[in-house]
Amino acid sequence: MVSNGLLNRAQTAAKAATARGAVRLPTRVKRMIAGTPVVRAGQTLDLDTQLLLRLQKLSGERGAETRTIPEGRIALEGQSRMVAGEQPIGSSWDTSIAGVPVRVLTPRALVGASEPLPTLLFLHGGGFIYGARHGTHDAVGRFLAEQAGVQVLSVDYRLAPEHSFPAAHDDCLAVFRALVADPEQWQVDTARLAVGGDSAGGNLAAHLALAAAEEGLPLTYQLLIYPMADAAGLSESRRMFDEGFFLTRQFLDLAEQSYLPTEADLKDPRVDILNAEIPAGVCPGHLVTAGFDPLRDEGETYARRLIDAGVELTMERQPGLIHGFANFVGLDCAARTVMLDLTGRLRTALS
Image (cartoon, rainbow, N blue to C red; front, side, top):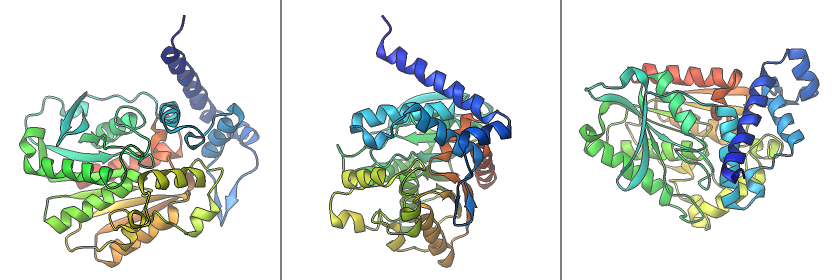
């Protein structure tokens, strides 16, 4: 008898092979399957992205938010593995820092190095209710480590609804403080230390960068990938892309109700970073948004706030992509090219 675990892995592998094969099809064939180009406010959805969304719909694959949270966690992990592939890494091991589980990823080029290493503290996305260092974001962490040539410490902060606000924010800040208090233990070069994250993880990373400046702690760079910046968001992009582009209104509502159950939580500046004070000394960084993403406008508004406050931040919109493109590193597509650009920026910032 085949176990459910083996069956699920076989199904995920089959779907991953289908996705890889689909993006390699001739453009004419991809367009036939994907359908008429999708254009919103002068932006055209990337063909490979539209193709993958179409295949997901044809397969009957349900979004994580339509299931129970435990079932959604399993489903989202499978969906992530389907597009992320198997990424190489020099070494991978699990530990804990300040009592928080952390996966340490060392690229092949740095395995065996004795000196302090350039390091990225990576905070995964998932709406504060999904995601894990060993599941949804292991491939992303490996990709960042190998392509940027840096050590990645991927944090498994506590998730809602089991642990509501500010559990995730507290965990990430506790790990960061412990790192800079004893960098030798973790082989971290504090002169080459970055924080980064996607979606909810981008919110956590942004908050950590503000806190580091406020507390006078060393931080070199922040990499924010389509961050959530306004939990009670009413932006035009939240209305325009609330269905059909992976991240849905239902997902956002579930995430916010689970992690931020009170009005005070929604307005707390640790989460509502659009209204957070920008202290002096915030580290440089880069913020990227996706054109077909409900979180697009709030991320770009936050970027402009940082720039207006004098932070050396660059901002870029990827007009044809959707929320979640950071996980597409296993496919030969535009999203992977963008991720390669981000790793190049990270490598340069920590060189």
